[in-house]
Image 1: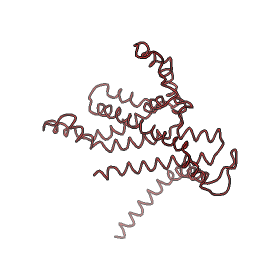
Image 2: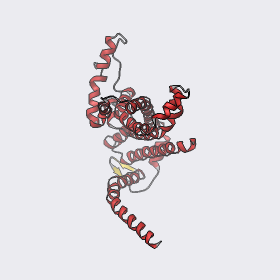
Image 3: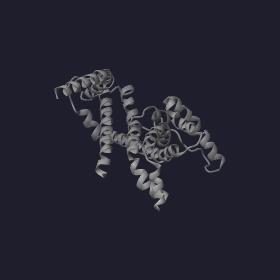
Image 4: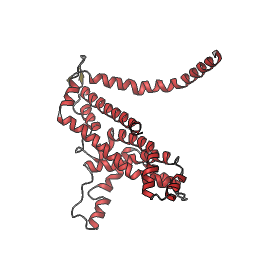
Length: 287
């Protein structure tokens, strides 16, 4: 018994030594900055770029009682919900086809799906400007087909931000779903169809429940990145789409109100954490 405990402690010490560099890096680059931001949110603003030394909850009361700030938070969450929904509806059939297909060009298709991850956010959004602009490809096609008489405003609004975020975050959804769908035995689908089930019924009762973990992980990834996105709303939404990330940037660069910017950041992080906990509990409640 003593020998077993000694070996267990030795293994634990080895793993602790291996984890120590990573824990130190996370502490310095993540936990300490988060603590600093949370601390700044509890101090009053004494003027331009001036943070008081006293402790107060005034910043949180101001944010949570003002309809303008709450509207920004709701707009951010609505943007995340729309992006997640679109990514689910597009990503699921794409992931299923990529997993089940046996084409020679399958690797090329996977590369094309993942290609947005290989391009920086700035370059990716710049590429959308000649496509979504008033004289871009989309409007050129719509005007050429006679579907519209005037150019459609695809940029500087909510629609442009959704298009840019879906393009950027769709690979995360596809990757999450592909990982789970690969583990589903195709013989289960064949057995269901051979027993008289229709393809949609097979998908609804067998494939979809078994792929729920992939949907959950993809949902968490896409939602958290979408509600914290800054570059895409700033470039494709302009000043007409105000989300939490761009609001924090305005408070820091324009208003120079560091405590209130920290408050908005903490609230956004808290909401993202609450949504993550709720999503993780959903499979347990359904089972």
